[in-house]
Length: 78
Image (cartoon, rainbow, N blue to C red; front, side, top):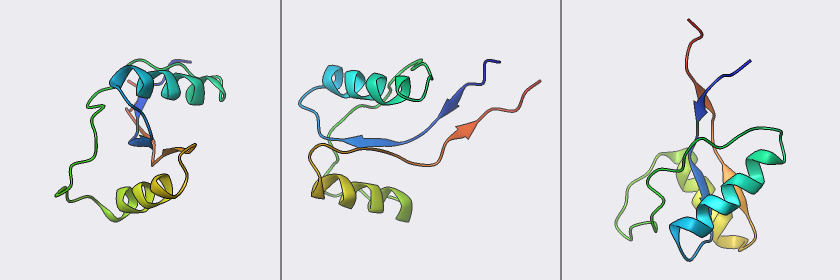
């Protein structure tokens, strides 16, 4: 059954394309399919984020090989 969902993902990448490739590798390891990667941008120095995202960023900064995803939000089945 197809269930679209979205999540915040943090990882080290030099370009949006590298970010997308890392996301594809991560989701495919779960048997999922990446539909899109939006707002693949460097973290702004003055950005304000939720506690969950701040934790993800700290964990990513400490591990250059990390691909960390947050809560998955899915859409209701109609």
